[in-house]
Length: 356
Image 1 (cartoon, rainbow, N blue to C red):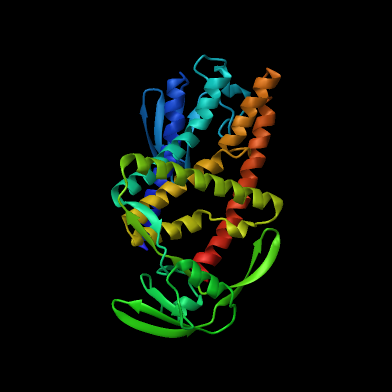
Image 2: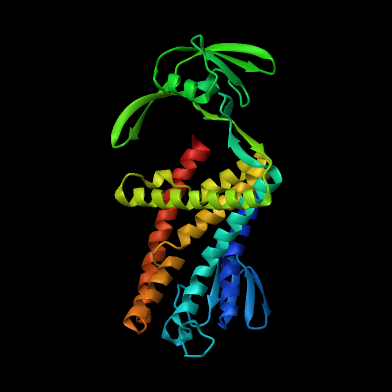
């Protein structure tokens, strides 16, 4: 429990600091005044240095940078905007866009650099072509018959399985049918009967039933040059962004539900699990959360950075500020909806990771 807690603090601390530092440094570069830089919400304690108060909050579920003259959930009304040159509203559209997107950009950059660093120091992950067991799915037949990561499948029903594809296709074609497996472990030959679980999948708009025993292909890491590491980091970052956008699209169209998303409770659990798996897995998890949180923040929803970006672009088109009361109302509604969404996701996280 202590490791899980400490791991979660590290993960969230890094992600929040990186994001808020992006906003902070962009505001300073654009000549805007930063009133507060906070890790966490509320105020546990704070230190003022110059025009900025640096705070640690007692609610460790995020953070914020308060830029003078910016209409956000921390502003009470029009009196927050005085037309001073160091205020957010006094800056041009490019400067506003830079300040509001810098946090997301910083999350993406750090995620990319972490993935690149892991690849450079630990090697590039490559899937093994042989039917070697990687991860095991909890509660699936492979776990029940005693297969372990690193086991090499030799045959299925007497058929030689030299390649992963041969073994996978054989199992998938036999849902709920008994298969005699033979595998190799540390020089010893083992065998057992396994019955693949019947699972429905959708391919090209059609639903079909396949058999799964709950194993992934094993992955080995091979040395990578700096240029190759940077390329892998970029590819991994883009793949995560693409997959996340696809997931959001599926949620909007009803093809996915909130049950498929991971919230704070899930991150707590996975922080501990990845920390126990080793530093490579843990650093990669921090990279993943950086990219995922960055992408979440740029979605065009009130309260999030993407919502503020929409305001900026609308104001650039209509050439006048959106009334502060309208912005504040949208912020409050957005905050309420976001809290409801977070609570629902957290509820399903608890059922998935801590109850089942």
